[in-house]
Length: 249
Length: 286
Image (cartoon, rainbow over all chains, first blue to last red; front, side, top):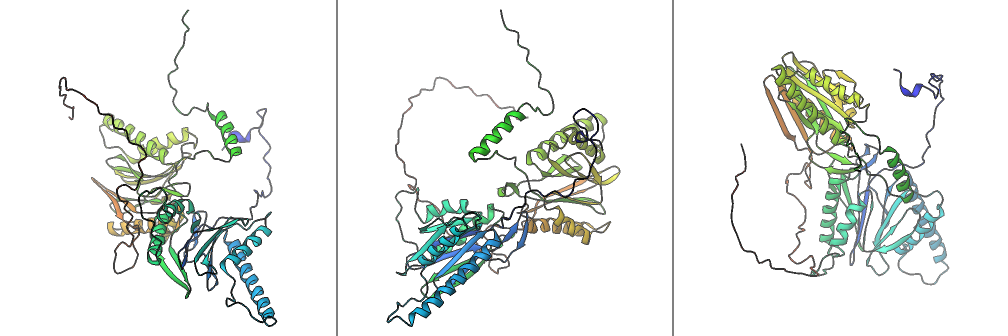
């Protein structure tokens, strides 16, 4: 078929020559989808994520949860590029093991050590910030949210950007459907844009129900969110997991 | 002296006058960080088969805008003539308008010939229009119908090429649907078997392709009869647990009480009007 592209500038046909393999700008990153959400209550915290792993228009896995348990009082949710999520959680685990080892060694030399042998959520958050900023010029393509209990036993949520900027929140949504979930949380938990409504503190059951409803809505409109929802409820008793099915289309 | 201005009659086809300006705008908006609004695509799974008595067409019902669902229940099987229907994938506006234009032209053609239109005629009209626009009209179609020569099924690509086949699939979920067809298609199937096969092919697209989703629409065309089944299968319901014994919705209650939206100021202006006269004009509803 003779097309316009085969003609050169002066009207003569261009010589047809084989170009070798052409590499169009290799990218080390890819987006694997997924949404993460964390809510802090009076004496509990919830970290929830969907379990779909996708790439482009395809689904890699319907059972790939994005919540990782770090300690008995801290869970981290990671979404973004799955390769970096896995590596980052391995690095955090390794750093925590090193710290426990060091603490165990020094404990023998100390007369009295505090009760909590585990790192607090705040300390883990600070450590993660330095890990992420260490890769400032080749970032981990991961959106992190840490949920857990602080040293006073109150719920805590820390949200991060890919290069380590973080802050403590009451609730935060991250990942592909974050823009849809965050305004709903602002309204239902933060009581924003509502007048004359009693600011009731969030109970555990209401919070879990809210998280389920919010993910059902996200799965309706975001193609990357769906399949199943994993909810990790963190209390002083430990971490309890619950699975809920979502739309699979 | 009056200036003479000649108003040009609008030329048919696309006008490319704004291309240069759009390129400049795109570059400018890229600098500012925003992006040019994209046309809404359907990101679809559509398919069709020929069975013993006619044609079965199938389609999903999700329309996406980027990776967000814009319409959860849009209709992708378009009417062309009483015996011909067409599924459309690609840019939503293009499939909608193209099928409407050809449907209108076919009706005039049918009145002129005095006969029921043939599928090959619709195919020829569609491909000639799409080729004329050199692929700029992003419409990928599955055209099917039954005419005096029997059942016919065509797939039509945006650049204007067509294929006449016993089973076809189009759209982003076409590979998933074709996988089902290649496994289970046989010629001269019965109606229920054919409907089940099309339903399963679209379901393959819905569950394995992120661009397709929601419900399954079917259209069964036989000699003298069309069965437009919308929806044939509500494959996904909102907030309902699949495979659970109780199918109760588990969502919480999010109703807002009166007064939740704060009113800052209220101004009431009474309009004192007198009725001067009354005249009733009935609407022509013939």
